[in-house]
Image 1 (cartoon, one colour):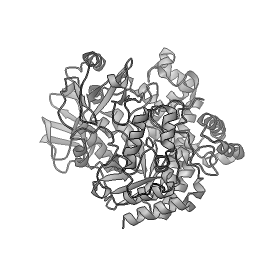
Image 2 (image 1 turned 90 degrees about the horizontal axis):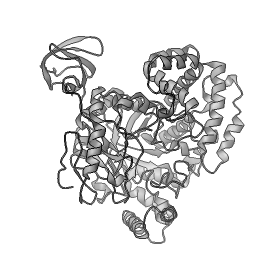
Image 3 (image 1 turned 135 degrees about the vertical axis):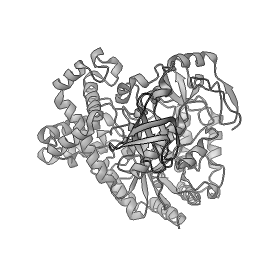
Image 4 (image 1 turned 60 degrees about the vertical axis):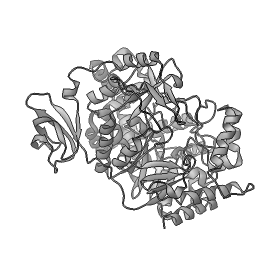
Length: 607
């Protein structure tokens, strides 16, 4: 990468450099529109914005009292002592407003040992006891299989909740919230109180007969049975205590979910008096619909119980999407911090000539600071909780995000800067507290300084065989190494040409672009005869992966059972993205011959 873009006082870059090192200027009309959307921060923001520091750092104030998380009051004089406790505190100087003081270790927690593991699209990993979709019971089975095989981790797709409406959102990367989980992943017969009702297990398992994952039918069946369990059992004192401990965050989510069931998934279309958290009208709604609100809180309790059981004894790396639905619960809760009239995406690059629009509204950087970083803190903490790992989708978004104007194409956007140092220190603090490793998905256009900052903060890079020019033996040690992702071809799909043919059918590029793209990826698989089988190609890809010295080696279950279709093909609208089940039931995975070969190959690579 060459050149340094000019950033204005709104944080907007006037130019950008693409993956081929070609410079581009942002249209003035785009810059003007984004400036209006971002607005001007209040004059006193710098006097009350949170301070993010590390023990031993100099502070922006000469003298102050700090009320620590545990209630202890400490006096600081110009800098933090080297033994100052980590955490979220409040700083009060003699002549200024109270400010949040976030004290971070500066580096994420990392395990001592290298490991290999499975990347799993959980919804696709159906077992014989599933109700049409891979669930937390199936995750428990995969975790046990992985442990028996000597794996050290499992990486799962985002498990965050979507709107609880009949038309279920399929993409795990467009959730209604990044703080709560999706009850479609519950194994219904194992929910507390299920023994008190007829769960109609045969009817649930019959949903496995579909060739695709029909989330609408699955949620309709699960919701009906879960509601009967809730009214028969209610969770008792254990649920009541848990619900009270969760406080306002859970109450807001459950309230949003109850209203969404009645008025739709987009809070902008609700009755005006319900469009903001708090207020007498909303309180009255909660009083009138208390049972439904309690039901949605109870679902989260059941999810926490099952996730804890599913992940016990192994690092399960959970995925944090870059954003959330513009009409969803997080957008409702933090509406004053969001940019209206734009969405997050990516500029055109070598793999997508049109660019991408991911549909999520971005947080305005200065408003995020004005909110004491709480939207970011809560999202990181909730996703990292209880499983030992976090993968941050599009980690470059901590540094800058590509804002796409509502009336324009992705190519009409611009980069807007974020306070990356503060955000990375917050990630490090949450990682330290949870003893959870962090991987940053740094694929695509990565500007200078991003990977260096990640390394400084102990965030693992993400390296793919499909993308890297260097021999895997030369890849960095502080990384997760893999072959492909959910958005890219599987090994079998690439080698057989099945993925190319599907791209042609979907019209994702010109014939020349598609052919050149496949040729470039095939060059990453040296040492194969032209008549090699798909299974031989899979084995060779994993032999190459096993050469990497990286801390984590990640293989997908899709590759390990020879699937030819990728989970998601960006830019398509009439393809069943995120709805393709694995062709092998969870109970048969361990005995699949190709999967066993992948296990041996990766295990040998760690010796």
